Image (cartoon, rainbow, N blue to C red):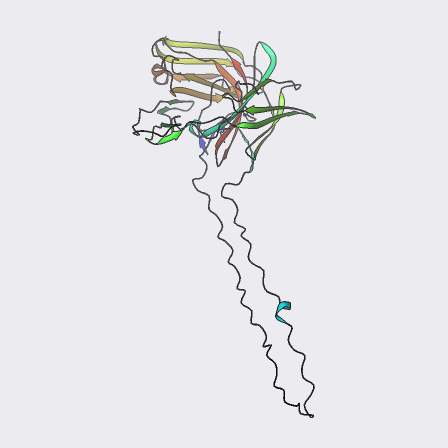
Length: 353
């Protein structure tokens, strides 16, 4: 695993890894310091079991000579058993396991997916102005090949990801696009039949995807703010123990240095909560530019402050200026699978005055 302060703004595993069509996320640990490494590149098969030899010497069944037996000789021995009564070793059975057999995974509290590895995301989220909570799940068939593989800039709290320059692939087959590595890649497709089950005590609520973009969404009808999670897709199961949606942080303020079209720094401050999680923000490039260029930051909420350097802000403030998206007081969990990374987020969204 590799420490990295990442995540996504409005609340996947990746590890990726999700009801109508909305967004949400999960976590059970304070600071999401851990970025999960990519799944292993290869999966070795066991060698086939060698088939045992089945050549068995059969007894000599020829008729004896018809000569009269010598009276002094003992009785002739009983003949050997006929051939059809002889035991022969059975054929060997091939017990080689499937290379990518579906499995059961337990999300790791406090871990987050590397954005380029995430193919699935679960979110349970709320806001300061309503007691209601929502849940959202989205699972694609693969991670997004167009997400930057590594940050262009990074410090202790933040990472700036920059869209790769256009690549040349020639003519890609129908249904594929030219990825940044100059290979033709299929775009991620949302999966149908993904089931998210939230549990509170002895009550459950189920969301199921239909293959529509955005996955499935619903208002949470269970009591309280603490839920266990089970996610199933394509024969796989992910579980996460009881996790609570954090309460909003108090006293949230923001100070922007410079101007919206030329920011030199962004400073956030809040009152450290008694039950801290992480304070996370995802700042995208101006929507007129679009594309996978953005800055993500995360710190332990007990720190009470977050600084974003101007070098990670100015590239985002093109055309009509910086579009800061607020913060999330969040708990993360994630796990790697052979398909990629699944991420769960439990969070409350907040906006500074």
